Length: 301
Image (tube, rainbow, N blue to C red; front, side, top):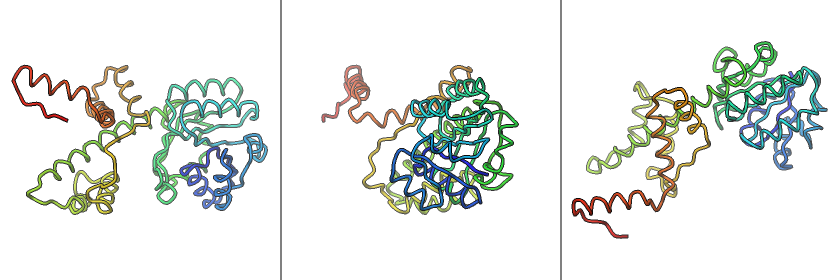
């Protein structure tokens, strides 16, 4: 099966390379000439524009987007509209907000075009291990793309599936990432408690290795944490500043809209916000309040 890939950053290029290795023909476009050149070295036919990409594909066309969520995705979706023909399909494999995916799917349906939202997990390891894909869209449209999903997944019958109609793929991926926030926070807090028990002199890498086998807290995230501690036990040179790419916020918003209690995910998001405040006014006020009502000492800067 032939596919067009828009966005040849690390993940998009890796996905295209996995497809090529699986026997598919892939044409790719990226605004960066360097990215196109690197992709060409891995068997991906480079296109110098969206129009050239669409022209290179046989009908009915399938175009996979791996571009940042938000305006860039919107601009790409709109730019493709006049280039595509009835029966063509766009797959958004990025981390779009599911509400945006619903809107885009409706726009494409009105033109006789397919729109599939594919929440994709696997990161930089996906090229080797395969990708987990949560897919939303018309059942027949998704089924027609089965060879693509089977090649990208860890196995033909594992790690992927159509979870529901348009929007449901990105909704499911949103919640997946919200859970990820909570799991990462728990590992971070647990290892921090271990590190602060200085009299035991615990080797955090050793503890992680023990937990990786047989423990009820074993997971891929634990594997990654353990590997990181093995390379850099004190995490030297890493600033205590944690960004978020939006999915955690969207998950918390969805919980609020549905009246669902989600304290762990919500607090993990708040901790990410807290990590960015190097001059916390709130903490200064807390210290001042303790001094005002109890006479507790205030530590000076």
